[in-house]
Length: 433
Image (cartoon, rainbow, N blue to C red; front, side):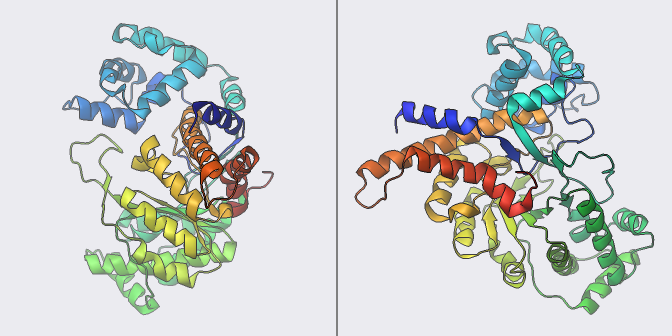
C-alpha cells in the first residue's frame, strides 16, 4: 500500500458529507460550551483515571475545574487515538496547536474554548466546516422532542426501559405516566410501545435501539407467562434471573412487532456488561464478555424477516460472527465500530472483513457515538483514513493478484460513498439524503 494512494483516497473520502447514525448529542444544545465539556467525555475521564487513579470524583459540575484537573494527566494518554481526537478539535476548531497543551496553559486553553464555542454562530459554522448533514440521536420514550429540527436530527428510541427494566417500580410508573394509565397488563405495555412509536414517528424517527447485555436470549414466550412476570413485578416482589430473561424475550418480540408495524429498523448493539468496575468514572464502569454470541438472536432474526437489524458488536471476538450473519441473513446490516472497537486497529480489521465478505449495499460504515457535535469530525476522520487504507490495499492487490478482479479508484470511491452515505440513507430511510 503506497502512502500517496492512501492519501489521495482519504482526500476524496473526506470530502463526502457526514451521516452519523448514532450519537448521544443533546439536540437542544448540540455543541460543547467549553473544552471542559469535551474533557468530560467518558473516554478522557476513564483513561486519566486508569493512568493515575485518584479517589474521589471528577468535578463534572465545574468545567473549568475539570479542565484544570485533567489537563496535567493528558501526558499519560498521548499515545491514544482519543488524544488524537482531542488535538484535532484543538487545531481545527480552537486554533490551538498541540504543543500548547501544557499544564501551565490550562486557563488560556479553557478561556479560548469559551470564547470560540460561546459565539452564537459557532454551531452552524462547525457543522458546515465538518460537512455534517444528518445526526441521529439517542432518546428516551418521554424525552421532549417538540421543536426538533427534523432536517438535521433524527430521534432514535432507546428500548431498555421496556425490555430490561420492567422490574423497576420507577420505570413502570414512568411508562404509566406516559401512557396515561398504570402498566398492569401486557395490553397496557403494548399500548405504551405504540404510543411511543407514534410520538417518535411524528418527529422523524430513525430507529429503535438497544444496548444489549451479553448473551441475551430471544425466543417465543406465551402472553400468559409474560403477564405472570408482570404481576409479580407489580406486586413488588423481586424477579429472579429466569423471569427477567423471560420478560426480556417477550418484550423484545413486542418491540420488533412495533418496528414491523411502523416500518422502522431495530439497531442492535450487542454485548455490554454493565457496572463491572466499582471504581470507575461515570460511563467508565462497563466492559464486555469475550464469549458473547449472536446465537441468542436467531429467533427474532428468523421471525421478523421484514424488519431491518443494523447491528454493532462490542467484543472483537464477535466481529467475524457479525460478518457471517450479514453474509447469509438478508436483514442483518453490520453497523459501525462500537465503543472499545472504535479505534484504528479494530476498525482496520473489521473494514477488510466486511468489504471482502458482505454485499456492498449492506455495510453501514461508521457512527461516532459522540456526545457533542465537535467529536463527529475527528472520529469520522479516523474511520475515513482506515477505510482509505483498506481500499488502497485492495486496489494495489487487484493489480497483481492472480484471482482478483480489477478495482479502480472510481470503484473505491463508489464503495466508500455507499458505505458512508447511501447505505445509511437507504437502510434506515433518511429523507433528502
